[in-house]
Image (cartoon, rainbow, N blue to C red; front, side):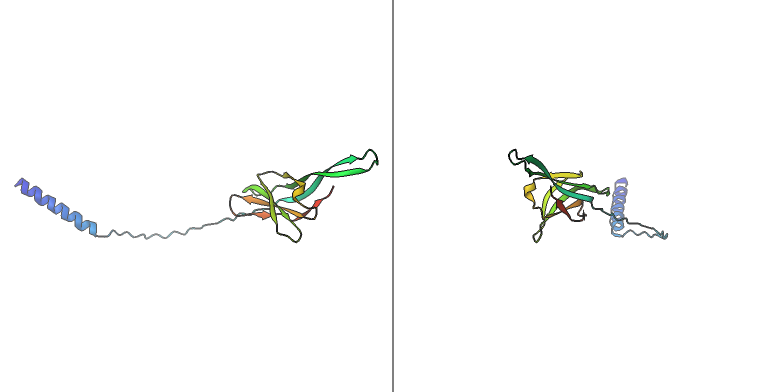
Length: 147
């Protein structure tokens, strides 16, 4: 009898398990809670006080005593962006009547030196704040100060 009872108990438990698994579970929530959410936006500020200038050396001709200026460097400097998300800067050259192109990209600094032959004296320069995202901010365009 104990074998029969065990077998019937096993069959009953298996049937209960199969029937119980087919019934969907349900739960209800009766409490409504108001939630306030604020989403902040980041403002990226451009560099300010941009200055681009040629650095020159002056030599005096010993025969004529006339000074001769030779451009040796292009120095571009600015005040850094105040944005905490800034990761670097892109220096762009804007030729008159031509397409703008990137002169260089740098990390968090406030000046770069470039080959003066890579720009013309009539070009304008801008510096763009870069972030880890696609958000950027470009400075005003500035001309290049001659020697």
